[in-house]
Amino acid sequence: MIVKFWFSPSHINIAFHAGNNTQEKILENRKNSLEMGYTLKNLAYLNQIHGSSIIRANKGGLLGDGDGILIDKKGIVGMIMVADCNPILLFNRKRQVLIMLHAGRVGIERGIVLEGLRVFKEQYQSCIENIFVYVGPSIRVCCYEVGEEVFRDESLLKGKVIKGNKIYLDLLAVLKEQFQQEGVQDKNITISPHCTCCSLEFFSYRRDKHCGRFGLFATL
Image (cartoon, rainbow, N blue to C red; front, side):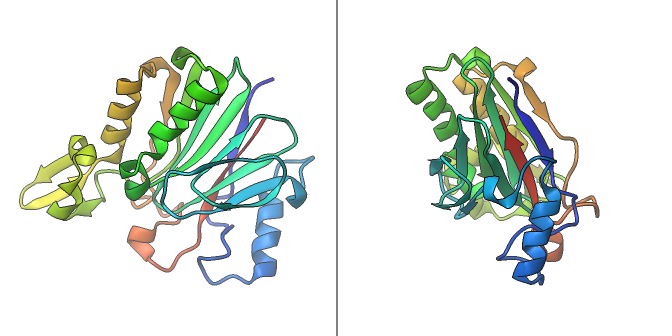
């Protein structure tokens, strides 16, 4: 068994809380984003709050407040919604467990990625060398201008980039540092080359503000 993951069509909104689509249209978009063989009853999702809570999905439906979905059995499809934040998939092929993360600046600062790796190690006795990482399209340093106050928490300092009189945040640099510190091997990390803010193919909150959300879907 291997993990399967895919993205919803980049300009189809799958979020009730964002964009200007009706609930009926969102449900239709979610249904159309699922691979053959799965229905909305299989779909597990969150009320994402930019925190560090990871919830185990025993069935489809709303899991509650959190920013991580853990799946360790077949028949469940997880969904993470983003529009600049990093959609991250962690997978242990040996233990057959996957964790999906909604990891924006605040979530990374609060330790959502480190929490995902901790869950693997403590709850599933996972060896770090067996963990594979995928980071999807997200806002990149080229477009992520921030203020100095962002770096009051030292956890983001690795991503501080100064160009002229402007400051930018490189969240990928922060993520890579966290993965390296936890022992995740570079060969086990894949990162999408796409910046959501640069590319009009994706929803981007930084670029458009009142926009929808595209999604990362994954299942065993």
